[in-house]
Image 1: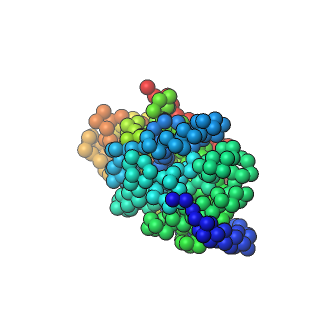
Image 2: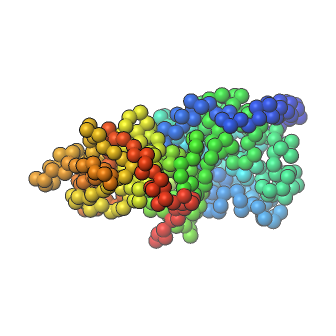
Image 3: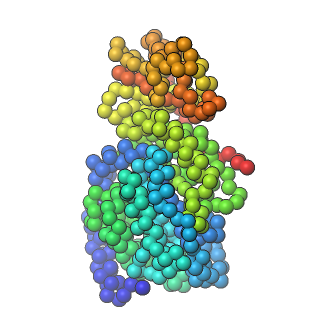
Length: 461
């Protein structure tokens, strides 16, 4: 069902009111996000991004394949693709359980990507999930399933809408003036109505990610729910890259496991589980959250390669989660291969040794220049007992001594996580009752990489 003339007039008035409100607020330094909620967001640490839409059966880039396409291609896409979307094996509870196991605290779902297809039962257009062979509201099913596992839910929403442009006879693009809702009243009204549907008909929405012009839409979001967090559109959300140093305020890194956001059936290369874990700890060391993407296949199943990596992450998080949640950056992000986080409310520091593998039941020694011990300091490898003699008569308890050149630590990795005792992922050392060494910062900063860091996937067979 299309928007009626009456609803268009109402949307016109609402858009004008929101435009005036946005101008009056003047895009302040703190924006419209509640500062207390921003602090809460910093503790969420890890989320699941889900790119899934009507073009999934093609195995193409999501939406963007329409840019530069022929009129005939577009006509076939908009008329035929909904009839090909039938995820017969979709089980959102299994997705949610896997996300919870992997330590993910929130999910962000592509309710509408740039192509304009609505993955919910929208009254604004027939180009939606109800007009597919599946015929059920996937957004509602997914949000209900994740909430049942205690996972917060978020909406990805594209203000750009190729379906509207195609209907209007415009060139499909994201760069021409008419593609921007500010210059296209029908598109703005369309978006306002859709955002209102999502934020009033699907329970509490904790986050909204506007991948495009956000101004009047985020004002509407805050008007409906002042506690909602606008991520992209209001905070830094670097995509496929990381800043060299911590950024002020809450921020969120967006990464794929491979090279593509949606399902890519062939020609794909995936990052290893170790790379993903290192990415997470680097994001947390710099004060951000990691929104890690999955791309379900046309049957509604998370691909084998992605589930295996999430389960590798799950084991690491089960052992080391205390160093990832409720933390803040240390005075430096790393000293060489050792990265840091600090517990939010205590003087506990976590040191991540990323020079892996660390051979099981062997000692390593470190000298940390940014950390100073006190008389109450305790040092141990996270996840293992300090006096583990299960495999040897030798105690594996860590030891330390403070010298003028830094805190010297001797530790053994003794927890047997795999049968063959080979563990390729970072080991975390907990240092309780630690103090910072501010005078060490200038020298350490000279060795840190201040350029953006990229994580590139390795080729897999």
